[in-house]
Length: 135
Image 1 (cartoon, rainbow, N blue to C red):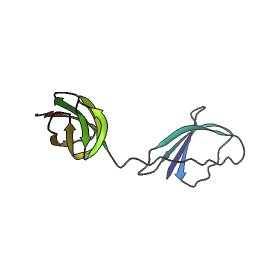
Image 2: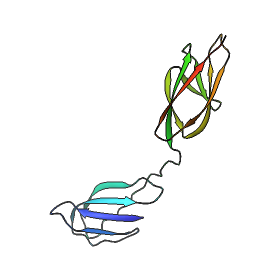
Image 3: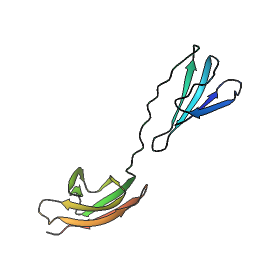
Image 4: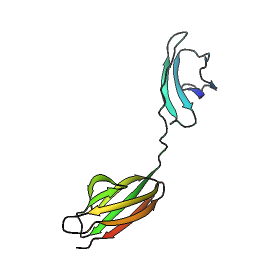
């Protein structure tokens, strides 16, 4: 993992290296940045107090699932929203979060035949899914 340390006072010089790394630092406050492919970058302030100040920082893995949104509407409204066979616990009209990709939404409302639509969700986008229900 790539580690970068910046001194916060007097615009100190930047030091960097691959972890595990030992950097010669005087006591004081520093900004620490850690980067590793597949993980969320870490950025934070650290306080170096002693001759040796060990730091153990846990990185958070980046989600492999990219997020998209679907605005699900029905006529009449109030239908249960089921995505890929799993109930979302939400009812129309609702904006629901889904992974990017192809999905099938099923809407169920008492007194009506279930309605189905297949849609493609793009990362960061919102797609409108309108499903008319028939008695």
